[in-house]
Image (cartoon, rainbow, N blue to C red; front, side):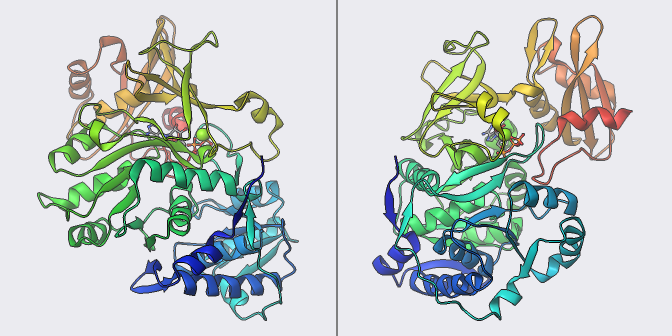
Length: 490
Ligand code: ATP
Ligand code: MG
């Protein structure tokens, strides 16, 4: 059902004009200033013949002008495609074409990508921020309301299990995502949410959305620097930050025995499985980690582990946010029993209505308002979710299910291993057996690693072979591409 809400940024500029909306490299804007800047930018973008419900794409790094531009496009009700900066020009061109983009907004540092994209899509309209800034503003009326059903953003999935899919994220999805998060974490007067994750991922965009909906300050970083982040957390300049486990690991390496300021209240850790050694190290150092599970399709978090449960339920992603529901479907299509593994199925007002132009995926992924995540997990007796792995990466060996993430977590706890990936390989006796692919930091033998696993894993889960490689294949979101691991040994 459609609902109309006041234009978020305009309402913020009216309700709390003098509150700080965003800080970037020492410069800040209040909500009133941010609104004025966004309106001016919207008028300039409008002069490029972009109309309501057209589609623009942004290829922009984290900085103040990007923050303003995202809001500007919302003022015009222009759908925004968020492009990942690490994609190659052919990958970018594919997404631009797939989404039917009318205008690409980028910046001078990506000129070479722009030229290559142009050679693939010669008719694409491309403007840099500098060009937009110097164009004459159009007289355009700024919308008073946002409709919950309008598509706000189109964000492609990371493409970890196959080709990326364009997820339609509506204003209503973002609204409910922000509300669901606040019902779990609360909102405090002194909250400042640090954003060192890219704005082009849902983890970053959802921080921008919470900022305007809550009236909260966002501290935006051009990129993640563990030392800078630790310094800010020790100084008490941030109360919440969003991280993925690789970021947290680097922060822990840099932190030594030091402690964060007591006003720091939430390290929101998501994006992928959280290796247990990291969670343990955070517990030892009193770091308030909130494990969370979510995806592009759920417009950020959908399940989060509340702080009062974090010690008792280490390794769990928690329970659904208040407006969301969760169940586990077993292989017969029925509801799984507690502790029984199956596909994680979710429902909620933050869940996308579907993928752009993907009839097949839409048919197979959505049933009666429930979305099949493609992830495997189980609920314990108390209803806490434990995410095991991707359905497509499950290894079935002699009838036993093996989750590569569990083995990778053990391998990563080995002091000589820097990175690890596990993949099921064909075996004439067992159907499939796990093979490990490791990047090492210091000399270690295959036998040492296998013995280490023997001590920690059931025999059928112990890798049958360990391949030493220099690097693991990762996608533009830095996620491990297990399907490409066998190519390393061909
Ligand atoms: P694609 O859908 O194209 O294969 P992707 O699923 O990696 O790509 P994202 O939407 O960026 O794209 O990532 C969401 C996925 O990340 C989840 O479906 C899940 O597999 C994984 N993930 C997120 N949070 C967690 C978590 N707490 N524990 C384990 N896995 C997680
Ligand atoms: Mg996915």
